[in-house]
Image (tube, rainbow, N blue to C red; front, side):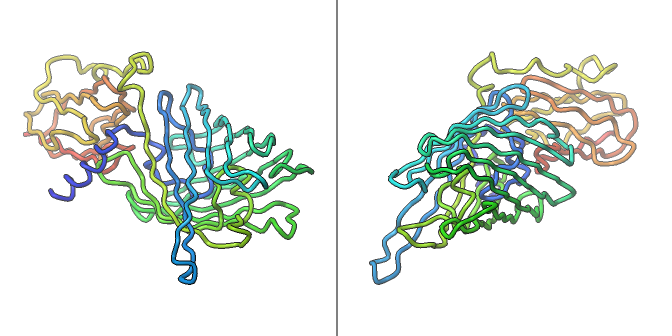
Amino acid sequence: MHGRAVGLALGLLTVPLALRAQLRLDRTPNLSGTWVADPGVLQFNFLHRFYVFPEAQQHSVVNFPTFTFALGLPARINIGTRYSTRSETPGHGNEIELYGRWRILGGGTAPVSVAVTPAWNAIARSADGELSLDWSHSRYTLSGAVRGMTKPFGAKPAKAALAGGAVIRLNNYVAIAGDVASFLSPDSTQKAAWSAGLAVVIPGSPHTFSLHASNVGVNTIEGSSKRGTFFGLAKVVYGFEFTIPLHFKRFAPWFRSGGAKAVAAGERGAAAATVRMAQIKFQTDSVTISAGQIVRWVNEDPLDHTVTFDAAGAPSSSQLIPMGGSYAVRFDKPGAYTYHCTPHPFMKGVVVVK
C-alpha cells in the first residue's frame, strides 16, 4: 500500500501524463532508435552527465546536461530539438540540433521498426541524418543505425558512422542497456563512443529514470558518434536521464482523438458496474456482478489504455481506448475474469461473476 502511494506521488510531481513508448524500456542511453512520441505529446527528456575531478583538484564537479524536446505529430512523425551546454565542435560552448523523425515501418507490437531522422546541427553547420532499425522479441531489443554528417564538428570532409545497441528488460519495470558507435574512418581524435545504463519505470507514473556510464557528453547525432573529450582528456562520465511526457490532450481539446466505441458491439445497455481508468490505474480493481450483466470501463486518463483479459476463453479484449472512450462487456458465465492494461501492465483488475 505504501509502495503504491510513493510511486503515485512521484508520478504526480510532474502530473500523470503518459507516453506508451517510454514505458517499454526499449532505448539505450545514447540511441533513440525508432522511437516517436504519440500525436499531441511533447516529450521532455532531461539527460544530466557529470565528471568529478580527482582529490588533487578539490573534487569539483562539471556538469554536461542535454535537453531533448520532441513533439509528436500524426503519421508517426516527430519534430524536436536537442540542446547541450557543451559542444564537441571546437570554439563553441554549447550545441543545438534540430531534427525530425519519421517512423516509416513498425510500431506498437510489430517486431521490426524502421525510422529516418534528418537533422541540422546549428553549431557545426552540418546536415546530419540517421537511418535506424529496432528488432524486438520477448524481453530483448536490438538497435542499429547508419549515420551521415556533411560537416562533422564544423570541418570537412563528410563522414559516416555506425551505431548499435541492445536492451534486456528484466521485468516490466527494470531494464539494462548498452550501445556503441564509431565513425567508419575514425582518426586519432575520433574513437568509439559507448554507454551502459540501468533504466527503471517509476511505478504508478508515466516516467522512466535511468542511470548511465558513458564516454559521451553530448547526445546529438554527432556527439554520440565518437568518444567525447573533457578538458582535452578522454574520461568516463556518469549521470542520469528522466523522461517527462506532456500530453496536450489534457489541455487542448483539438488534440483529442475521435474516441473509441462507447461500448463493445452488441453490448449496449445499462452497466451493473463501471470501472474508471484514472491516474494510471483501475480505480476499482475488483467488481462483482451476476451472470448476464454488463461491466463498463471509462478512460479518464490523458493516455490510451486497454482492457486485456488474461485467460483463454474470456470475453474479447479491447483495442486501445483513448481519453473519453469506454468499453463494455457482458459476462454470461460465472467465474473470475482477471485483466490488465497492455501498455501499462501494472494496471490490473478482476471481474467476479456469480
